[in-house]
Amino acid sequence: MAAKSSLLFIVAFFLALSTTSTAFNVTKVLGQYPDYGSFNDLLSQTKLAEQISHRQTITILALDNASISSIASRPSDEVKKILMNHVVLDYFDTFKIQKLGKKSAILTTLYQTTGLAQGQQGFLNITKLGPGEVVFGSAVKGAPLVSKLLGSVVSQPFNLSVLHVSTPIVAPGFGEAVLAPPPPPGSPPPAPAPKKAAAPAPSEEEEADDDESAAPDGAPSPAPADAPAADAPTKGKTPPAPKDADEEEEAAAPSASSRVASSIAVAAVMGLVASLVAF
Ligand SMILES: *[C@@H]1O[C@H](CO)[C@@H](O)[C@H](O)[C@H]1NC(C)=O
Ligand SMILES: *[C@@H]1O[C@H](CO)[C@@H](O)[C@H](O)[C@H]1NC(C)=O
Ligand SMILES: *[C@@H]1O[C@H](CO)[C@@H](O)[C@H](O)[C@H]1NC(C)=O
Ligand SMILES: *[C@@H]1O[C@H](CO)[C@@H](O)[C@H](O)[C@H]1NC(C)=O
Image (tube, rainbow, N blue to C red; front, side, top):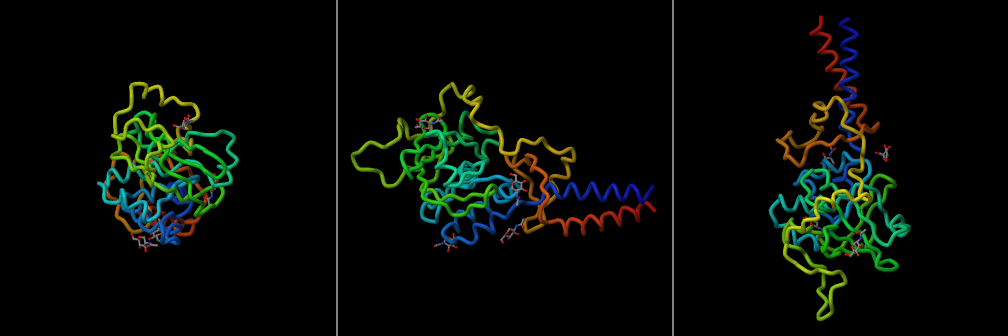
């Protein structure tokens, strides 16, 4: 009996741990590209790196040191919201973007998973203006398509794509917009930008949430039953700090990946302790 239950315990513990294992380490991947050093630092400081690494299918719209400087000194809460809009819950590399049948599409971002998004704040609009000319912006109505696709940094089909974009995308309501550089003197901007201020979106916000083209989440699997264990601290540097509301775990899908060995080791120790207690 005791042996059997400790075996079950080992299995349960192993399963619980494996749901928190990561598909890739975004900090390490971006660490190979010094141009994105500030962006990478901010992903770590806002703890978004952890959330990103638990995802299996992600596109990151990365900002280089020069372009991120326009938002880097904003309050950390605001920076976090902005960066969450730079994490798309789907895989898009430049090839897939070229192949996009439509001229424009709506993309779901990590911000949508917080449950805090108002209207279309959790979504981006990607629009192909012409051959090789692709722009991104907040999907909130009237928001300008400020951020140009400049190239690809990393592509690991179909899990991780990092694209280099020109300008931080600040959704209306997140803070002061950053305009696409350089402001063309005299000529009108390409996208309609009636108001630069972060005006609250108009009243059709609610129904905008029902946009069919917008998948609710990249990983549609429901939370595993052993939810409490899903919060187990990932091994690594930071002690488990109290989480913000918007950091709640939304069910990283179980992945059969790397950290098997260490998981087994921990599970074995725990199992041993459990059986000792049982005897
Ligand atoms: C890549 O994503 C697929 C699902 O999209 C997943 O099955 C696979 O385990 C992922 N690969 C890695 C290395 O995480
Ligand atoms: C990811 O990589 C960074 C830098 O190499 C390291 O400091 C961090 O501990 C890694 N995170 C995980 C969860 O392994
Ligand atoms: C970008 O900024 C980071 C620190 O924020 C720095 O470590 C890195 O060297 C910078 N990269 C370049 C290319 O200047
Ligand atoms: C994306 O934005 C452009 C310009 O505002 C707009 O014309 C287009 O309809 C939008 N695309 C979608 C799919 O909403």
